[in-house]
Length: 166
Image (tube, rainbow, N blue to C red):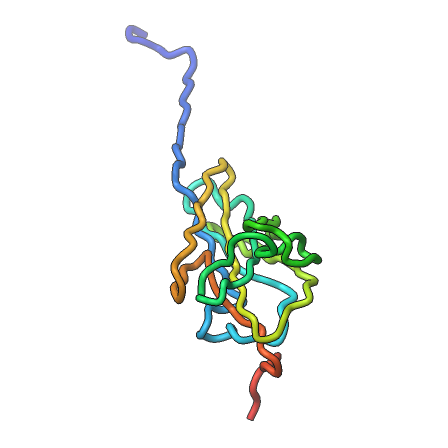
C-alpha cells in the first residue's frame, strides 16, 4: 500500500461558553407601562435566553420600594419566603420553576402567596445561569429606570384584574 495508514482516528471538539444568559421578566410589567398597576400578584413570569450551553436556572427576588423609586435596603425590605413577609434586609432569591424550552430560550415562573399592601410599589429582580454555570449579574438601576431583569410595579386598590371587553 505504500503510504501512511491511520490505525485510529480520535477527533474531539471543544466549545467554550463564557457568556451569561439574559433574563427577561414578562409579568408584571415595569411601571408605568402595561400590566404594572395590578390588584394582586400570584405568579411572576419570564424567560431566559442563552445561545451557548443553554438556559439553566433562574432565581427571583422581590423587594419593597424605598419611596423614591429605588429598591429599599435595610431591615424589612425584601421577601423572606414565597409565602412570607418582607423581613429580609437584602434581596433573597428564590428558584423559579423552569418551563418549556424553545432553544435557545426557556420560560420560568415563580408562584407567590403574599399579602400585598395596596398602593405600594415593589421591585422584582431576576438572575439566571446557564448549564455550565455562567451567571448574569443583576443590575439594580436608579429610580425610574428598568431593564429586563429589574422591574418596578405597584399594587393598586381596584386595579383591573382581567381583560377589557367591549
